[in-house]
Image 1 (cartoon, rainbow, N blue to C red):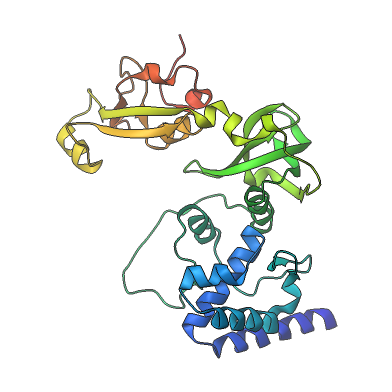
Image 2 (image 1 turned 45 degrees about the horizontal axis):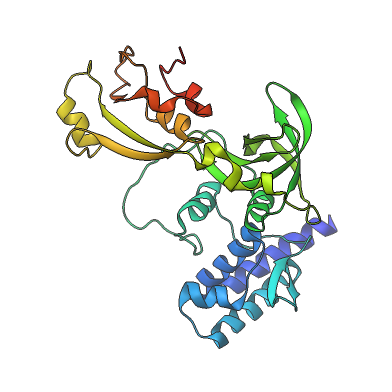
Length: 306
């Protein structure tokens, strides 16, 4: 009970201390914590570049954060950066969607706003969300190009121990994956982040040449995809408007490793004879042969190899 009471009191004191700072200061400290938690490092130069502040102001921000949560970061004198400690406990609360949007797009770094901006906005959200502590280890591994040991739960294989070399996050529209080299299968694979347990950085393990992302053929392969209004659906002019088509087509560049996810998300009929007639299929892949040899093509609606 004493430990719980102490923790509650500490959180209250931190919240009170944060409330005494200006919004600009809180934004900078929130960015500091995001970098620390999900990139695995923060330095004065990061704050200077992100917010356009002077060196003295960045130094003060780091000192303020140390006063609020000194156990969260340790200073590496050789590189002159701060890294998260094993005792790290976040003082800012971020939703998984916001963290992932920040990682994917690089905007919205600041502290979450305490009130809505005055514009009503409703989103569908996701049924699954990755655990942020797990995500933090995964993203640090990506940033530092470090192998990762994980307990992975697969529908086909059950629980297995894996060593992976992750290099990118993938948003399939339904859930988040991490792309990387699987040392067990000796191939590049996608791993569902919600199925990862007990991730551990393998800082002493070296990344071999064949494990690097540039060796991932499916990732490196770029498809020039042309989507057109489905020939068997009415109101093709409205479909052109909805998707901002130019000259009756929507042209995309997709990675082979993600093409199937994208085509499934947007319900694109990928059959050669546009045989999918349900109303959800408003788009048709004009040249399904583009998907030949693409591993994720099996996810594309209507696609067939023969």
